[in-house]
Length: 68
Image 1: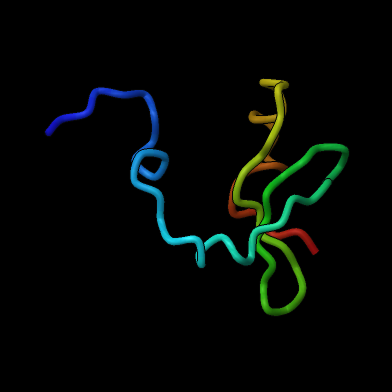
Image 2: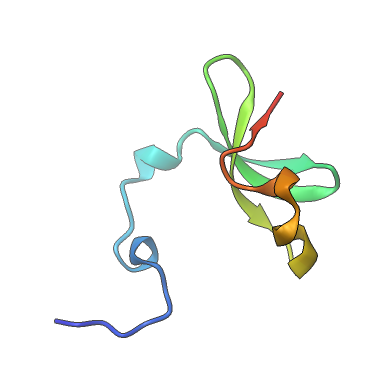
């Protein structure tokens, strides 16, 4: 079967819920991000939630960035 869709593979075939247990909705510099809590207490950005396209061009909100 072939699916022609703009959706991501993970949206169609979701991963197990255990992988989302460390994700939290965090406000960072006035923007909401989903971040994963690291063992040392810091956060790593996983996803930016914004309706402003310029926020996605800002490197401060890029996935993988560590927030102390």
